[in-house]
Image 1 (tube, chains in turn cyan, brown):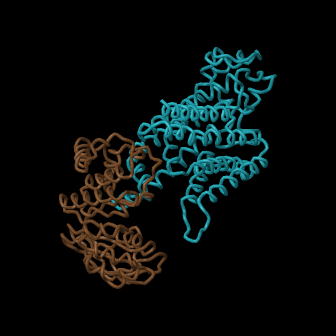
Image 2: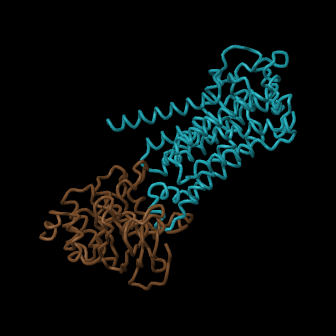
Image 3: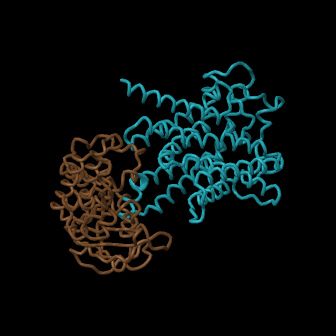
Length: 337
Length: 248
């Protein structure tokens, strides 16, 4: 397979190796996605496991999952790490009442990946998809942060415009690159079953950086969000703090969108944070709780997708939504008690 | 905010200051000096330009004309109107108080250690709010929130406290208690206090300086409360209520 940065008309991902019955039967226990990015780069040790595993069609079991752990380890780690960091970051996004900003930014990142493929096909020059995703995510963030005095539209309207525009363009671009169309679907809806090693590395590296930055900026982020005027008067660099927050969002969203798709990225950056804010009276606890809920959503969502043959991204998003529902229920029960 | 040389006890000075929005002045030029230990009442009807003037003084809005002078490194704390604070944030009262100690890039430092914790505890004790320290701020009553925010002023070792309608959600008793607390803090810490308030009789009792702003009449009156509250501009704007205040 060519390098991920240089998709070819024959396809960046070897779907057939997993999906074609002649090569190896569809992975029975694998989640129901039709897309397996990076399948051709599966560790050699994982290939026999996959073959034996997919030889039967009965309902997948926990044992199937455990016996193929080498195969599914990377996507589970990716989901857990992305969920944890997006969850923590999401607390500040939700508190700034900018929930759909993340949706628009993640769709823009997906469009960036699609454009990278398009450039590769038509121009023969393919920039790294993650860089394109980051560039588009950053551009979307800049558009959302820029407030023209003459603009009479609320920010929500600009968010809606970006979201719809980026989603529609990604689909249109996908239509022009038929060989990668399924990959675009995977990026938009998070249907990818596996994660490529380079994407996992990017997620781990960027997530670590974002987590450290969040820790450093924590007190500034809290003060600037809770009482922006008070913070400005005490000479805190509020505009720079906000810029840093949205740059971190763009960075994390762009690498995680490339790896796991826009839908779970949006879910991870909103639902765990909502649950944690609802459940905790302390912001520091809420941030940690959101990280935990995001990690659980990523890990359990993947396992649920495996066992129930669901699409991965939707399964992860549903687990996040279920955790939010539990937090609401727990808060109500606590109030009644 | 343009900084020119002032020396303490002078903290702020407005010289021919024109304030407004989008480059359009809404008030005539303002000249005054604010010194440490002074208690200023900022009065005027709704839409009179009070918040615009305060925001210009604080550097949140650019002046349309004239100058704002501030003594170098002046420590200002601001107690916003209720709507200025976001109740969605799950913060403990002591965490809100600790914000008072932040200046510039200090938030990048460590947790602040014992010294900061001790400052927070002292500040809460001074406003008789130690028992609120571990309470969620968003669940406190308006009176309790004000006490916590007063503690934030002290924790920041402020020289100037600017309070924008601090008692607007309080009953008469709580309002008087709040003003008495403000005066106590002013005396203990040598604070210059600027209070925006619609409770004129209380303001008259506590303030030693007053400024009346009236954007509709394009008028500004500066002086002692006695001078301001008998001024024709004040009587014109407040009608019969002005007489009540004068005889309070």
